[in-house]
Length: 191
Image (tube, rainbow, N blue to C red; front, side, top):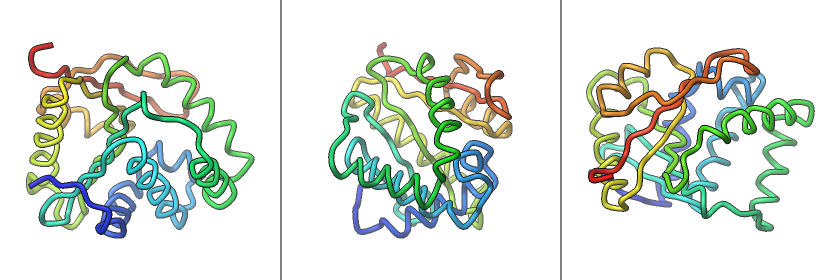
């Protein structure tokens, strides 16, 4: 079952922190300082709560953070989150690299689409279909909203996973980053 909950914040942060330990994009953001990953995931959790949806599987072994890009705006609370992330997670010197990454991504973000920002499975349960089941439920949710869904990944093994789940690679960012970033989209049924 797929559900949204604020009570599972620590569970979601833990799942995503474990799942993204070796992720190239995440490690670019936190400058390969693994102890900072939970701070980034906590930031991302709050951001998704405010401007999207947070879902956790019934067995509490997988989580998803969705963002509705049209809802994003600067508020006092987001400004405070951003400052904390820069000071304690990213570091001021890394800020420009992160902003460059965001500029490179912007042209690949389809209008009126939901951004699948993070999907992660507790590594101790990886390979058991939990991620696929959760992704299917997220896609069903996006279909109910009559909106396409997009994501990016820097993990090559994820390409097959997304393709098997009906996503189409719509682009790549090969310049400007120390890795290739693959962009995927899945249209809502009937689009």
